Image 1: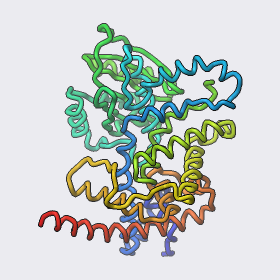
Image 2: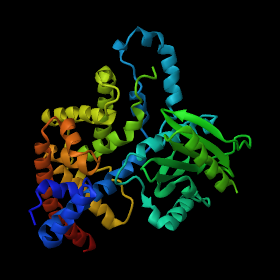
Image 3: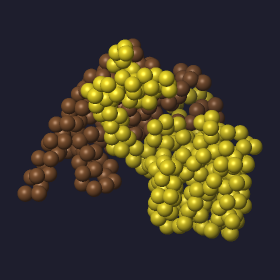
Image 4: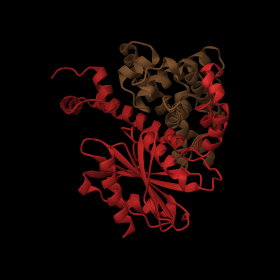
Length: 251
Length: 169
């Protein structure tokens, strides 16, 4: 068989080949142990980078950086100078905007959809490591997250809606740990369910809806736990998934 | 004002990349801060519809290269290596430390390529655009960087074993 060029070996290690090319490379590697060892080491390097640096994704966002995403340049125009008063209010309000930022906001429930939507957009684009524990270890995943949150969790089943559990991860929230379950459809669309402890807002367990930067979030409180389902898959389908989650969790 | 894209959703991954590049939390966040400031200044130049994340990484690359060139970026040595997220036993901590140290010994241009591809999951063509070099250059840096890292990690394993023996004694 033809020699597989070096670039293709890298693309194999990086998971960038289609099925046919992948099989070609595997056939080559089967007969060339030196190349096979190099490719294994490269994949191991990628895994090691994730192990070493993925925890950064879960760190609370430094407030200065959150502010820096909103700072207006003086040259940004007269409109902005006129709106300066509003901008200051905006920055204060943003103090709690982040995966792990904490603020003494009285209406903490109002913050949940923002945190959930942010966690959604941070993790759903990840191709190799969208989840910390995959669905093959679903029992372990649910037990682990339940233990960390100190509550019996369950991952809703969206098979009837065409979404499979991909896995989950533990995030740090300002008020404690947060569990994120990720689901994927056959055509690779993803939704996430964000779960954390949440004091009841006057016993209000209503189903609510918010849109945060194009991400739709359905959220509610049940038994001192807050749930938020996030996705950008169209309102009707989100509604169906959220109904299913609400029914399964509340039963 | 809502026409301006939201940069906050890119913060966690910009921080991850900066941390891996510099292996120092405060230098990394400085780099992110400068990137955001640059981004807000130049946001009018960003074409809506193109990849905002890749554009932000391009800005960060330019700032990083500049810091390396002017010597403003202090490369941490093994004994000073800080801010290593430790989430397991001693062996795991040692392995993470090895990765930090080995990355620090790679030339900055190779480190950038193997992290953009291996950690940030950019395609080779995207990495080439971010770095402003031909794809062929990306591939050769990737190849050299990965081989160098293999050698470094193999010798690091030996070093770690020696350190461990000393600790035990």
